[in-house]
Structures are given as C-alpha cells and as structure tokens.
Length: 383
Image (cartoon, rainbow, N blue to C red; front, side):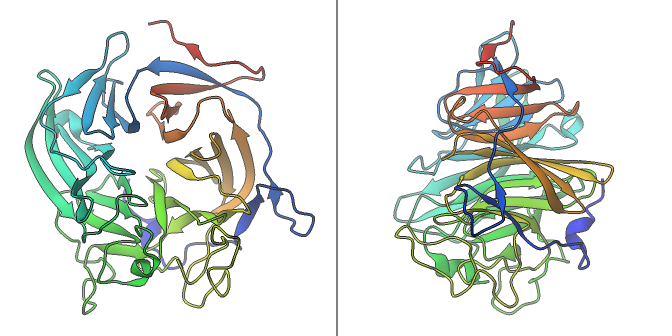
C-alpha cells in the first residue's frame, strides 16, 4: 500500500476529543467506561521483561526481551533464543526494544530492531537491520542504519518502530525528561524520524534543506512516544505518547508538524501545576484524542481501516488495560476499555494478517483477544 495520507497537507482534522479518566461535571468529555468483555487466550510464553513482538510469515512470533534477548516463539514448543544480537544498555527503560518484520521477509529475511546502547552517562538509540535465518535461529549481515543524538538518561526514550510497506521506516524518540530538546530540530530527541529501510534519508523529508536541522526528523514536539503504527489501508501514521500528569495523546503524525511539547499540553506537572501557558499554541498540532486528568500511559499501538471506519487498539501501562477507539474520518466516535487489571501492564498490541488482535503483557505472555459477552479469566490455549 503506497504511503499516502501522512504526506497530505489537507488531511481532515477534528477538534480534539478527550476522555475523562475521573468524571468531571465541568467537562463534557467522554467518560472512561468498560466495554463488553474480551477473553485473553494465552498463545505463547513465558518471556522475561518482554517489550515487543512481530509476526513471521508462518504465524510464529519474534519477541524482544529488554535485557537484550530476541526469542523465536512457535506454538507448541518452547521459545528459541536468536543469536547475533548486539550488546544493549539494559537500564530503566533502556534495552532491546521494538522489532519489525520486513514486508518482503519471505524473500529477503530482513528484520529491524531498536535498542539503547552506550552507558548511563552517554547513550544513543540505534536501529539495526539484520537477516534472520529461521533454521539456525541466527542473525547475519547486521548493520546499524540509524543512531540518535546522545543523551545522559535511560528513561522516557521512545523506541517504537513502524514500517510503511513501501520502503520507509519510522522511529519514535522521547525527550529524556529534558523537555526543551523536543523543540530543537538539531536534536533527534522528542521527535519521530523517517528513513529508508537501507538507512538513507529520503529527499522529501521536511527538514532536509533546513540549516542546522537533522534531516531524519519527520515530526517533533513529542514527549514520550510509546506507540507507533501505520494504517495499511490509508498509509496514515498514528502515534501515542505519554503526557506528564494527564495529557496522554493519540496523534495523526503529519510531515514536518510540531506536536507542541512542552509549549502546549493538556497535562500538568506531578504537583498539579500547569506546564504550558495554554493547551493550544500557534503553529502546533492538536492531538486527535487525549486523556485527562489522570494518565493511562499508552504503549503499543495497532490501527486498521475498513471502509470509512478506523479502529485503533492501544495497550496501556499505568492503567493496565486494552483500549479500543473507533474513528470516522479521523474523528473519535466511540471507545471501549477492556481487561483492566487482568493482564498487568500491556506493553504491545498487534493485528495479524487475518485481523486477530494480540496483546503482549509485561508479565511474560502473548494473548489473542477473543470477543465474548461473558467475563472470563485468562485461559491457556491447548497446544
């Protein structure tokens, strides 16, 4: 599917909608409420501190463990560790993070993964491309195709990857608790970057001819982007990020746009005081949807469009639940919240080729989410 919508300057945008995580009579925002039950069916595991997963063509999974291990999980057998991974900096939020499978994996065997490397005093985010041999469970032809500007913190780092399907790779980078970096085009921190899957910079990136700006930057003004997904039907790039206290956001990521942090935010600092002068700031983009006054801490993200309706699935960390948003023309028209406190922290969420939704819990298992009108506790699939 060609990459289309994120390039367009005339993408339809609605006024930002919101969810009240604590009901407020003074604000008519949508109130957080449960949806019909989903049944989580455990399909594979266990894993140690898992962060992300991807589907291989045969339906098996590649799963990252933040300590620096990559596991190949097939149904019915114990996961096998993949060899050939680089050293990682496993500290706070750092380590081996996202994994993405090349759309042409069946012919080229390529995968991509993000990881933090260096020391606690000076670390960078890298993206490595490698060839994976399923027979030997080994990587070869490893090559770093991106390295960020360095930082001296190992949390609020981002690290989510999305592939466009036509040769582009996007990566999120957090601000490392140094909010001024998100407005600096000479710094990768607080941005979404876009490169080709061979590591080169596309000629149509927005700041490639801007003096002093880093050519890889696609959008900026992001705080801690933990979810990133590309809609295979429309080509649109979607992102979720943590606000400070409240102000978590769902964003439609457009070429060259400034998403406001810290100039504009609906969140407050951890003492309840305002950070920005206003929740809107001239020249910055509004979120499609946001959560106030308490954060839900969105994580992995999956998006699918059928007809005029887009479905957004999100994992969450602090609120430990699965979120489903329904959009029409990029406007939120419905939302449901599932499995609160049943799986623990939901680190990643993905949709397979058949349309099945899977969630990765930090507790160490991948679950397939099946609809049901009856409440049920997690069950384990017969293997």
